[in-house]
Length: 173
Image: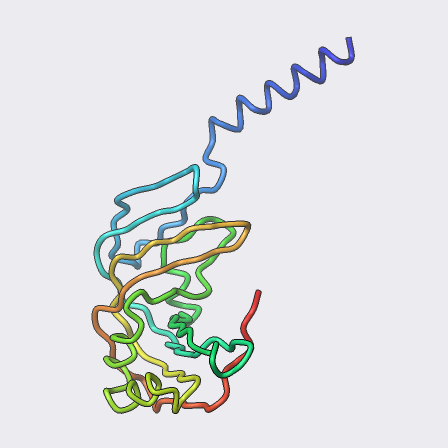
């Protein structure tokens, strides 16, 4: 009798689990983005349209074992809290950073060709610049209990001076 009750409880909970969205999307009216595809199995949402995001663009070379393997560039945007709250995200996983799929072009837009060239030639290992960015092709997801997002920068305006560093910031999970 006890085994039958446990089995019935398991079946009932699995039936209700499929009825509700396990990880709902949070969409604020502040972002001019339209949901075009939602993959519930892989927890991904794709959007069309463009939205303004203020934050810090970070361009950095990922440290390798030695100088010969130090050749991976990373570009991401860390949105300021007030604009991050307006971006679509999955409940419980607010947007903390956005990978920029056109990172070098975004860096050139916001920092200028000279700074971008310094970075490309590894004369600058890390560049940080605050700005206002117009993002498109926004995609957000959750994988292995970690939030991720990616987008392209369509337009960028700097808010202040560029910060350039010769040493990379620590990288890791």
